[in-house]
Structures are given as structure tokens and as C-alpha cells.
Amino acid sequence: MGFEPNSKVKFLFRWRRGVAEMDGGGGRRITASPRPCNGKRVVARKRGRGFGGGDGFLNSVKKLQRREICSKRDRTFTMTDAQERFRNIRLQEEYDTHDPKGHCTMVLPFLRKRSKIIEIVAARDMVFALAQSGVCAAFSRETNQRICFLNVTPDEVIRSLFYNKNNDSLITVSVYALDNFSSLKCRSTRIEYIQRGQPDAGFALFESESLKWPGFVEFDDVNSKVLTYSAQDSPGIMLLILTKSGGCVPLEILSIEDGTVLKSFNHLLHRNKKVDFIEQFNEKLLVKQENENLQILDVRDFQLIEVSRTEFMTPSAFIFLYENQLFLTFRNRTVAVWNFRGELVTSFEDHLLWHPDCNTNNIHITSDQDLIISYCKADSDDPLSEGNGSINISNILTGKCLAKIKAGNSFPNENECSQSSRKHMCASTVRSTAAEALEDITALFYDEERNEIYTGNRLGLVHVWSN
Image 1 (cartoon, rainbow, N blue to C red):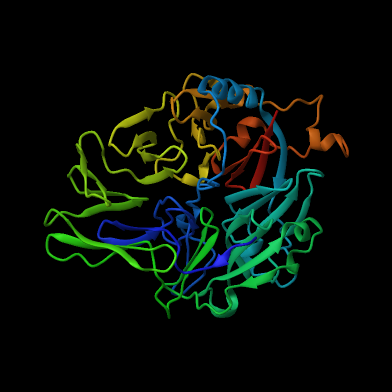
Image 2: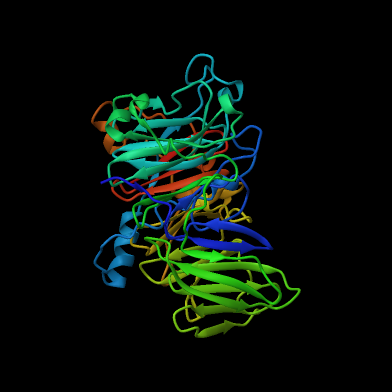
């Protein structure tokens, strides 16, 4: 079963610094403005080149909101298992998304330029890497060769990717020069077609929708639905925040299925104080104003919990953990785990993020939501790590660092080939050293089926880390 188009999809409405924006509480949206968020949303631009220029659509926390049925294993076993999984991981392969000739004839000039990787997705022994220029390449882990580019026309600029596991297809969201990059177009392509090198065998989605500014599209992985906002229509939503009036903000909670108003109420605010954020997670509402305490409101019974502003300072991004009923906060390169009673659950012992602005494209949460894998600052006492970072794997519930990939322990073994390479020919495509591969990582993805980590960097290169 695939995604069903439905405007009545659960999501949260964030009000950050007086500006209303919508972020995915259960899905993925991509935005063209640099706002760190929980999900990913694609927003149509007003005018101009739609192929980048900002890092807003990078905020993709890959596979975070996959609500899988899983058995919770013993914590000690889980930690030991994770340590074994990531033991001896090293650099194995290298792929290049750049083709100076372009992906086809008559391609737009900027699509020929080398640019950094902003998003990585993996499925069915394939790795999909999207560059900031808008070029997206598919690589085979079986042959370690580039299969094809997913741009099917010379003027297509791909903005984001989404793997739809319900029908084993890849959805691309693109803009085109034909309409001055002003509207979003979605296409679904079966993975089997991409494996055959037939990216043009897909079909268009949401053709009846006008996804021009300020329209957007969101893929809701939790509910297996798609939310589209057409500038010509007004869809039903889960949480509606109305215009602030006096000392309160009117809120309405609507049904996820039919848009029926389930509850309507006013939430009191401090006058003349900026709203840092309003976040919604199921029945919990998180409200924070400038220099005020964090408020956690249960909208069912209006029970209110306050957390001192000295304990909880406004983060730059959130990640909600559905399985554990917890949430992560990111602030000044640090990560913390909180529960909805306002208690700090975990602070990490060795997980200082590389990017100060919390580029969550360099962060991956496993589907069991027990591990966080991030691009971090390397140990200052490691002489081989000067100028580059490390990939740290930590337990979310304990904060313990279970494994670390760094320049000193990630040299490729010249006497061996990766498992997939041995099936064909023992020839590595790695030209970078481990230290070079750990420089300026701009995207990260963990393939749980293959137990491999894929990273992309500013040069448009993708590196495979495996044991």
C-alpha cells in the first residue's frame, strides 16, 4: 500500500520568534528557509533559482519517525550488541556525484558544478545522494557503480528525497526552470526501475495541486499519508494556532481524519515577550517565551508543568522520540534528552556536535530510537583528527558513547575488499584517506539492514563506512 493523498494529516504548528511555521510532528517536510525542525517540509519559493543557496532544506533527520513494532531488548544486551555492530568499522568505498558533463545533454550550467551533499537515503542495496546543486545520483552497493542520475530532464532541480517503504518506491520533490523554479513537483519511481537505470519510468504525484508559494508538501511516515498545502486551498490540520490576541494565543485541536474541532482553548502568554516556540507532541503542548520558564501543557486535562528557564534554555532544534515518549533538544553543539514531566533524562558523555548551528542532516536516529549517530568534534588529543571530526554512536537512554569512527581507527584494509565488492571484483574506489573523508561531513545516513554508515561531504563525495 502506498501513501494516500490526504490534507488532514497530523502535524505540529510551530510559532518561532513571532513567525508562524509548520513542522512535521509525524512526518517529513523540507523548507527553503534555514529553520531547524523535527521533520522535513518542501516549501515552494516565491521566485528565483530553486536549487539551494540556503541550508533550510537540509534539516532532515532520517527515518526518525518510523513507528515500527519491535521488542524492547535488555538495555545491557542492546549496548553490547551496538558495540559489536560498530566495532572495526572503517572506510570501504567512495562514490562521486559530480559529472562535469552533466546528467544529460543541454543541462543547466549550475547542475554541472561540484557541490556538497545535503541528503542521503539508502534502500535495497542502493545509496541515493542529493547534492545542493539539485543533482541526485543512485549508486549500487553490489557493484559500487553509479546506476543513474534521478534528474530526468535537463532543467530538473531535485530538492529532497523520500523512501516510501509501503510500496518500495523513491519520491523526489523537484522544481524546474520552465516555471522559474516556483512550484514543487513530486514523482514516485519504483526502486526496481531505478535498479534497471530507468529513473524516467516513474509517475507524477499530486498533479491537481497547485504547490506554488506558500504551498508545501509533507510525507507523513507515521500515518502513511501525504499532506499538501495548496495556495488555493486551506487544508485541515491537527493543531491550529490562531493570531495572538492580547495576552493569549487561541488554539484549536482538530481530528486527524476529518478536521473536526476536538478542543478549542486560549493559552495565556506573557505580554510583550517573544514566543520562542510552540511545539506539539500528541497530547502535550510545549510553550517557551523569551526569558520565561518552559511550559508543558496536557491538553486533555490542562495540567501544567513548568521547567525553570535556568534548567531548560531555548534549543535550536527538537527531535521527538515516539517509541520512548521522550524528546531530544539541541543547543550549542550539545544534545540532551527530556521527558514530558520536564525532567532531564540524559546528557551525553562524549557527543559534542561538529556544527554549531545543529545541522540535523548530520544526525541519525535508529528505528528503535535507542542510538544516535552524529558527526561530532574529534578528540583534541588525537593528532590524526586535526581539522576533521569523528562519527560518534551513543546510547540515547544512558548517554554513553558506544563507538567512535575517527581518523586513527578507520584506515581501509588494503588486503580486503568490502563484502559486496568481493562478489564482483576486488577493486576499491576509495581515493580519500579516512582523515579526508571525515573532513566537513555535510550529510549522514545509517543503513540498519546492511549495518553501514554513509557520509557525504562538501566535495560531493559519498563515503561508505563498514566492518
